[in-house]
Length: 170
Image 1 (cartoon, helix red, strand yellow):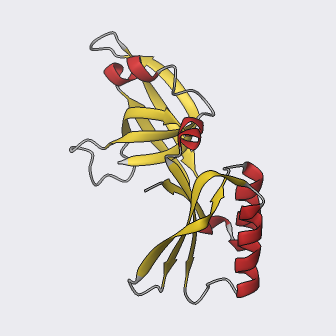
Image 2 (spheres, rainbow, N blue to C red):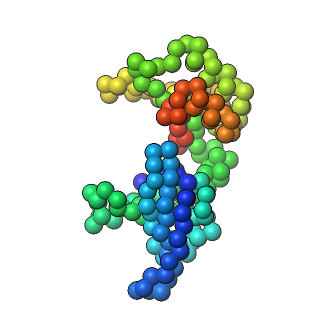
Image 3 (cartoon, rainbow, N blue to C red):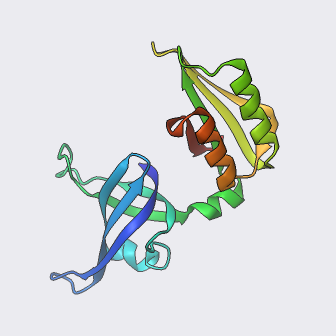
């Protein structure tokens, strides 16, 4: 599983069994917070990447014995700074909406205007669903954006915070 989150807490600890350092972490995204753990082998590789307030793309999963528990910690196996992904073109920006709440034509024009004011290398997608299982992902052929905070905030102000997402560029 891969998730994007901000590290809000990093607690370094020493394993009583092995004497090696590992970390207990708290992650935060737009949906809330979650606990995570980075075991000694992974922590030895990632302790310079996983830092407080770092925005990261994390890969990992859950232990089979913890599956189904409400608060099972996410086990981190790898981490990459989101800024590195932004610069590499691995991320795209998605504007999502669902019928009947699709934006009216004037709002769509405003979305296009804001995006063209922030030209860059990142693809722009429109993810649309009718709420009954039909979904379409459209990639803009003419608009590519620079991932800047004022662009993302402007789009969120225009169409709502839940409508703007970072996704993997295809």
